[in-house]
Image 1 (cartoon, rainbow, N blue to C red):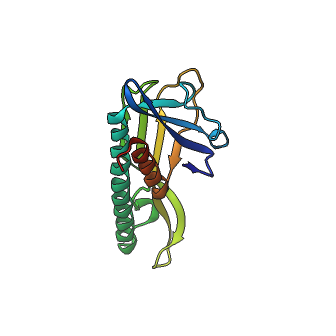
Image 2: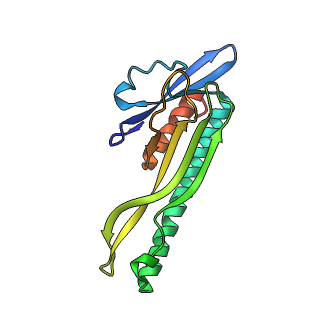
Image 3: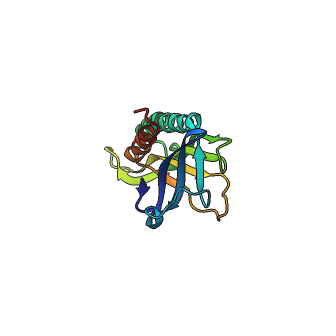
Length: 175
């Protein structure tokens, strides 16, 4: 799961041990994803079953809230254009949608956020140039173990988020 233009991947592994099933999630440069060893270093966290469920809930909540937020922005933009408002009075493309932290994971906390941000330019039906808005989802270990910080896994693709959700479900055996 990676956004090719960003060069960062979210990688997952299932670990079964005496304390039960765990999911290890790493945020790594895309070129290193095949060499990632799911070890407690760099930008990797280990989630228990409940924490993996929290991450799935965050992904699903972000998808739903992001879809609504972008639709609301587009409706507000159409209304502003129809009313003849100047561009500087159009709604902002940017908004915080949701965010949270999954605390207490082995090897550090896991931060996630969903935001609405500027998308591409387009021409409206009335002929005005407007800016679209898109939902972005970001995921990153808050702290690192034995490694330096790095970029967040960040995607604007609902399909990538759905794949991440499905991968967690598959590894947990809850699909």
